[in-house]
Length: 213
Ligand SMILES: *Cc1c(COP(=O)(O)O)cnc(C)c1O
Image (tube, rainbow, N blue to C red; front, side):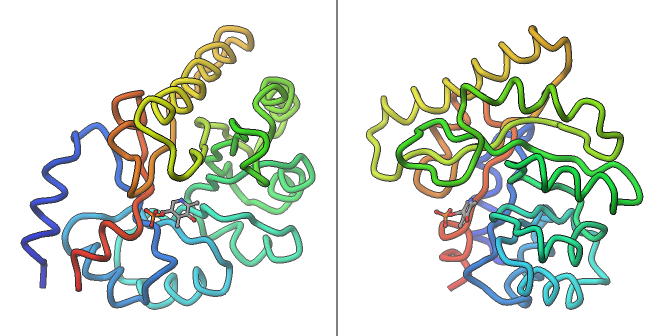
């Protein structure tokens, strides 16, 4: 069954922006409901719950995003099952993926825009050299940048944080002469500011799943 509220919500999002459902709060059945409504990009944070949902939804045409911190000792379990890694933030993880993956993996580099707040992510001033080192990895395909804003920021501060990621992307594209088409930024509380500042992917959890209850 497709919920009407969900369909109405989806209509409010510009069609060039991909909704990635952050499914950490819910079980496989709720994810199926979303997929039936047309949200087929699903983001998981944890390896175990990803593997569970991956099994449960094997009849669905899903693009799986891994959006949480991926520990190297667990990475092998997911490397060949996911379509996007949104949280690439270490060279060692990249090396592991590069050797174990059978074909290129689309990756977002997770960026720490607010150095104090974000414990994961590559500090923004190191992202260019980080990406430069990844250019030779044949199974790492960097498609863009991902970030989390500081929660409880006001409207102007959110716009500033998201704009900083967009300008960083533009700068790296120019300097390294590469294309980074995607910006994954914005969650339930701040996706509108993120879209204004150029998000191509918004990662939504609570706002979607509240519509199912
Ligand atoms: C949970 C989560 C989200 C979505 O959070 P909401 O505030 O519930 O929309 C987005 N990105 C990441 C990395 C998350 O862990």
